[in-house]
Image 1 (cartoon, protein in one colour):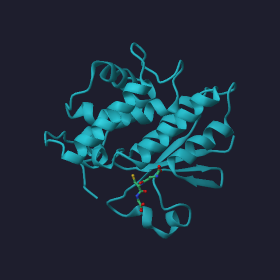
Image 2: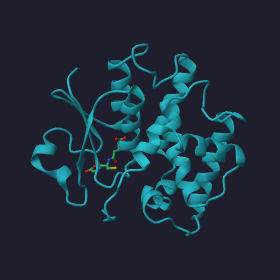
Image 3: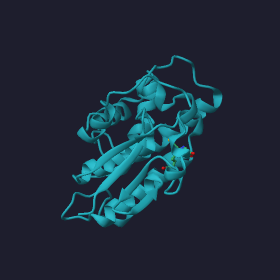
Amino acid sequence: MEPLTLYVDTHWISPYAMSAFVALEEKGLPYTVKEISLPKLEHRSPEYRAHTGRIPALQHGDFWLAESQAIVEYLAETFPFPKYPRLFPEDLKERGICREVMSWVRSDLMPIREERSTATVWYETTTKPLSQAGVAAVARLLAACDRLITEGRTTLFAQWCIADADLTMMLHRLNANADPLPPRVKAYVEANWARPSIQKWSERTRPAYVPY
Ligand SMILES: N[C@@H](CCC(=O)N[C@@H](CS)C(=O)NCC(=O)O)C(=O)O
């Protein structure tokens, strides 16, 4: 197998890098991680820019790929089931919803991403109340969870899929900052946060935080 390298941020707070990392872990693939410092603008170095200039990036042999969702899909298709565990549901409708959730958490809910940044998850939590826009975004997120998360189940579908990791990251921004969540959603996020692939990312030793 050609070597796989994942490029992540030195603070390990990029939710996009986390998604790619979880995908590699869940596939059980051998890989190495290289850290790129965003505060030191290492991603703007001519060498790194010649490849993607972005975090995360995956290097597979001499092939480079950016965009976390593209990385996850590339891993799913390059290392398919049944030799490797699934990242996406087998059922096409469930797979569609898995991709819908992945795209949605990457493109929407900006007030949550800003007011409950991932730095508040791994560095200092915040007690700052959410703005009106933040409250509205949380309401939309919880309305979606109401549709998506079945009582008593800790995965979106019968089996875990990569959207569970992405949705969990979005919800954990709230849970880590003691923003109230309905019991069903709290049980979902806490069960997923305990998943070994996510814990492996979460438990990294992190350097002091440098805002960027
Ligand atoms: N849509 C991208 C977002 C990635 C992203 O925003 N990466 C940031 C760090 S978390 C980055 O590379 N910033 C540096 C830059 O764009 O110059 C993905 O899903 O991978």
